[in-house]
Length: 344
Image (cartoon, rainbow, N blue to C red; front, side, top):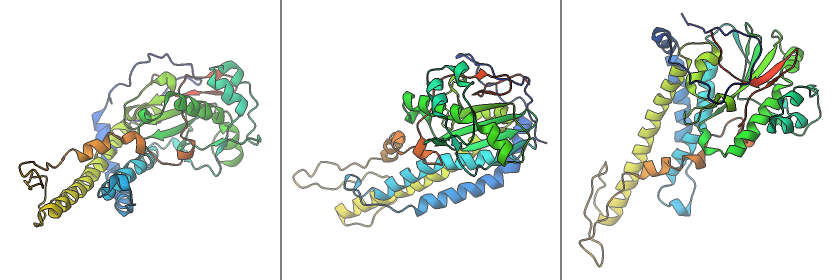
């Protein structure tokens, strides 16, 4: 039995910048139950992603000569992680019968006038912008996930980031304004093209899968916040477990590449059969027979610190501009804003 959380209120209010952090899951048994239901699916999608990482070809790079396989694995693993988290969250959404996952045929148009006003935090004027879904615009936005809560008459636009810290603050502000502007038309799109009940409000949320950045007022939330966003206890715990599964397998791949690289380096210097592991070997160096060529077991750690360079490449990669600012203004019939936590 999956425990769902119920929220009160039909409109969104601008959350405080010092909004409290999400409480721990109240019912550990519910979190365990959800994970047990999803574990086989999680293992399957992790295996699919790992296969893609292993199949990624290594390209010649004079800077990383001899380390191309390791570099290719790191780049592929980081670029695919956001898409993996997206697939996992979609599976979690399916566990709440009151939620519908909408697969948009086309991205949502971005009202430029509304985008400019959202950038300036002019919520009142932005809410009055005409919200015609057929507006002519050169800019569109497709959320990673569009979730409709039929019970709450609520549409939720989710943008999944592997780590928000790799984006500049200005990029996040821009992404958030684009999401808010496109949310103005989501009700009309849903009513015209999709068989879902009408919604009275729309919210946006940027999910930082790494958990390094969180601000309800700025629309940036962590994995733990999935519990109240989706009204499913244990949702965040399940996604964290998925990332642990994925991380363990990725580290095993990197370890294997490092051992191969170090073995080849040793073989090239001594002519001996390469040894596994990271044991230090003494090898005479011309002109200085007492100098050691010490292996560097921190090679993987150094590459992981370059995480920001190889950030997630998912459905919104070309639009990975971002979002930083606060919530919404209300109109009598429809409210748009960032997701804010409510009481049950």
